[in-house]
Length: 428
Image 1: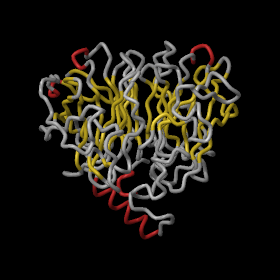
Image 2 (image 1 turned 120 degrees about the horizontal axis):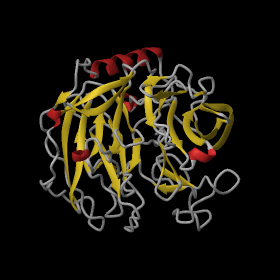
Image 3 (image 1 turned 180 degrees about the vertical axis):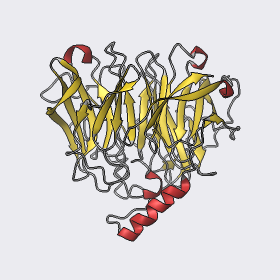
Image 4 (image 1 turned 30 degrees about the vertical axis):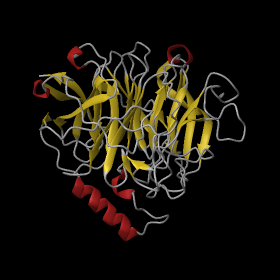
């Protein structure tokens, strides 16, 4: 799956011995799963980002305290289902059914309905999906905002050649729990130079457009400089209008929409390494992105809805987190992360999450939850001032947290990639 951690230095071809060594490394960095999730001790505070008009190479300001998280000792992660095969995404259709749709890396989408995991998959395209690489497979799912009436949904997967496919499917008429695998319409086909850093996320924004997160194409250090190349779709956040055009239309506000020949018109933001899970705050439309680091730093990026700063780039590969990585970084013009953490104590790879907006645990409202894949630590992030954020570790789960998701009423779930169990955050 996205155990992108030690794929960072992978060449174009990998020997069997190298692959075995990689798998042993991955196994070594993942701690055994404990019986129950527990609260975790404090972490050194994250940095505070500078306002966008300041030089991003300047020293970061200290974090301002003031945010108040509930005591995590009063909460636990309760298992809601098991038996999944490498779960990587959790979505709901917002259609009033109360169902959760659980994406398996191998190419299937399962349904959790009324607490029961249905035996028949909602969609099975495993014969089309190439999942031999750790970061390949069926990676993302997004339901059309009008799904209840039109039955349309979108997936992000790598095919048998390892290339990215963004496709539209339709539910079968009269069978709400089964989609038609023959209804596939490919919207985008993007060649991948390596097996890792595929991104994989999909989400509809508050503007009704479909957002697509793509990694830089893989290997280590973005060797092809894709993330900052306006003529490559890799290392970008794309934005398309799936309600117009023969396949899709280009939102006129996209940076390269108006001037032909300046860049791909689908591009909305650049400078991403491997955005593993992004989400919009359902309360206000703000965007959060977990972008996987190279050797030292994991980061969370943030962009307010209707941001008017004019900044188009998240910094990779000039920056890893807020730290210079390659070549002299430019003075200004970069969106710095609002939170970061170092590779220490087994931490290795960020799993982006969600802003909690449920009702059952209203005291968590506004907190952004995310995790480290290797250690299973779940972190909380809260905005304390215009340019100040507070980040703390909340739970030491021991899970391989591959994704977060919310049900129709906003309650927070996460998936353990290793065990195939989905959990819900609950009060003790």
